[in-house]
Image (cartoon, rainbow, N blue to C red; front, top):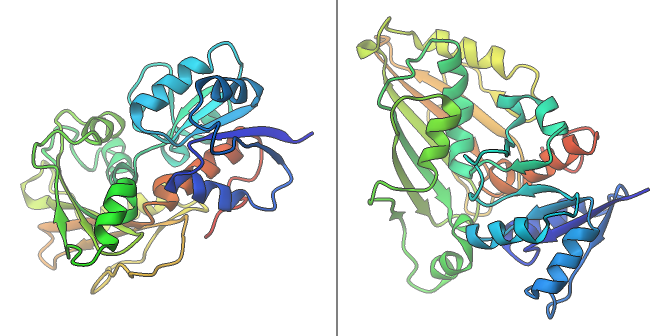
Length: 308
């Protein structure tokens, strides 16, 4: 019997990409609302209560509303918004970090944010291994394709006279920061410097490290080896060989990709390192992660439908 699946917010960028990854998959029966119904509270409630699993591709407040509408339904929920990423009672949907079994058995799963996905894949394993200190003041520099900013930002970057570069988050209160701190097990909040470039999709997340100033002076080679061991069994996350790339590029017309590549680059003196994650903000950073979690929750091979 097919699993009944409702995507609340299916008309948005993340929802549309989830739909694309589900094409031809007979394991699921999609519950679809027409344009007249998709913002109707009663119709959404009925769809949520009819579903075995619902994926929320909504703004934060609308996602919280959807969870309330689903109360009493028994539907399992994957929330692609940032509304529940540090909320009690929710399982953080990053199987490489928290384990597949927890997601497989979860009722409520919160998809990681796109930027935190890169940061956490790099930093969390190294903090757990005690190679990086939990009480270090970490900085995250990142650039993303403009599709992650929703319809308004997409229109801005696709209009005549579009910006070549957009830096933001200068209020130091970006909503991804609590997620990064919590799930990496850090003492201090991170300094997060995000930017958007004129590419539709793609993302580079970088954590610069002054290894020589850290307790114990960890070596870049040791960081690379630890990340390689941690992600060795992942079919989605790969750790690129050392010594690292001469350059990293985001292509303006890149194809959808649901994987993530990690790099560790150290200087010849062993005092500095740059941890770098490359991913698709709409892939492992959003829709691909939702499909990966959906597969795990349904007892299916986790890479089914993914673009790797």
